[in-house]
Length: 115
Length: 110
Image 1 (cartoon, each protein chain N blue to C red):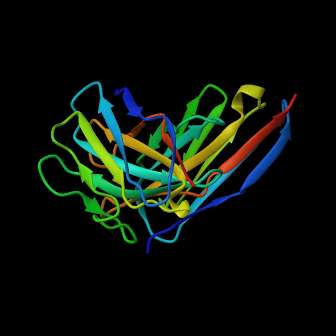
Image 2 (cartoon, helix red, strand yellow):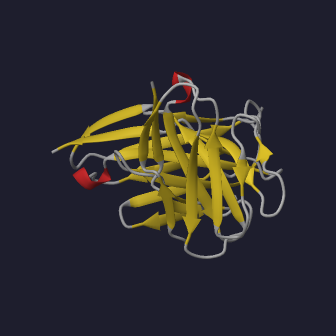
């Protein structure tokens, strides 16, 4: 299993600013992912955070807008850059200790509101 | 792109009634996972189904994977108020692509 800590848990941000979300896992994990979830909606994968190399982004998400770091097997950050109100959402970090398509553990999420 | 359809979107039941949510894919899946998200919470893994025709039970929850590995269901017998939340399937395709269904929001009236 894996316990995931995310911070901040919530924040209110001004348009045009950037915010970095941190994700810490209590054990080394193979895969880490970042998801976005609008209230009442499903989960949309933003990117796979690769340790030691550039993240792999899903269609519709780009590195300039959502730069991701993963310096080691337990930590990752997601930055939401040049925010607009459309970026208001819940951002979830997740990890899979085992296989690429194995069980996912999720952090408690970071709720961003952009004014 | 690969998509998985999940129905119904909402289900409101009286406590004690049964509940079922369904997921369907147009292409064969490698495996399928189910998650529960309580209101205000984060998704929590329930189970993974891998084999064709597989049936797994967790107390009042029964999970099925279709023979063709294209569909799956989650059935809850005699719902309780603690079952409230949104249930998501996560379809895993043979190229390791994972897609979450839209979710079924379950509310239970005591």
